[in-house]
Length: 395
Image (tube, rainbow, N blue to C red):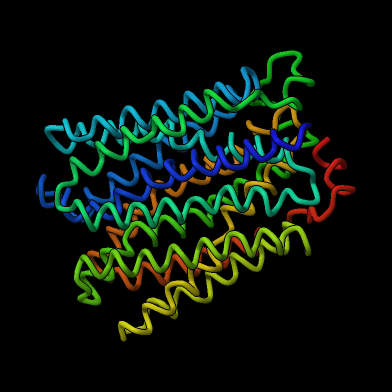
């Protein structure tokens, strides 16, 4: 593998996942104005996020299967095109029902990007540097969050223009991937008979598939339940103006960016498993502090601390990919992570319903408890800490 190839993949994958994150996170910022436009209840607002995550959940099978059978590059291009087109179409929606449908369809593309870019990096970077490389690429998620917060601050309440610009902007990563990416040499070298999704449930892989999916499901349920409603919580429960909420979320995402890259180094040093345990436990313990803080200054400083620990999705990128052999790597890793995101589709709706009776603060505390449960399940998975150990599971 030429050195230049791994750097092209690193930078291009970073840009692609930035747009993926941007379009996932925009909804949480625009949700109050969308609810106002269509006269939606809290539960209906949660359904919009749920539809997106359900689409992502369905992609857990389709995108990974496409990548393992037809190549990483084709699957990535298709995923980018799908969510770009359906996001750019949102300004045309006449009602809640059409909005719900388009968010589901966009989710089919949004879910594919994580698995493919993670697999690309795993297959182009040496195992000893893989944790930090994948974490760097996936640290583009909070970068997308910062961009989403800035765009929301500038353009809201005009959510139609906001979504159109975000969707049209996907032409940037499409050009980068289309013009500069080459197909994964590791995938091309082992391509033989067609891959079947059932292979990840073979006796040799069943345990890591089920446990990996359980950890991702718990962690992402807790994360999406909390993050979808966090801007609303700050605005309605803490009385923080919308413009200031955007600032708070920008600072929070900067803390997350630092956390992703620090935890990438930690993962390469102590192993992916223990880095994940530290990340999941840290989120579970700091989220309650963030919720109970009433002072704005405390919220401003606790936010980045809470977000610093929320690096688990970055570590998942290398860890889940290493749990599976090259032949079914995209299918296996994508299944675990995106089924987890599909399960988390219930989180915004559940938290929205819970908020009606108990308040958003209580819902966020429940999310913290679920995150700690994810850490407990993670303890039953193997530790992948060196190049010598990886082939034993992933060759």
